[in-house]
Length: 86
Image (cartoon, rainbow, N blue to C red):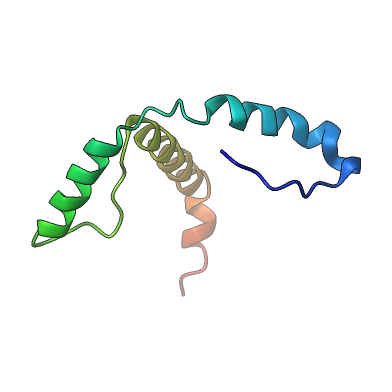
């Protein structure tokens, strides 16, 4: 990954660990570009492509966790949600 040199030094102590983590991951992602191309071609050829397509186990993990948190939030606030009906 190539990053711009633009940086505000006052924030370096906060962002340096994030930058280092991203740099370490750069080029070591799970994805296989050839398999991505195959998936995209499958998507294009599909008669009914999904509005969102998750590609990769990492994407599936992150989105599934977000959906679970959202479902829990909905359930926790269900009474308040329904309380606004007339």
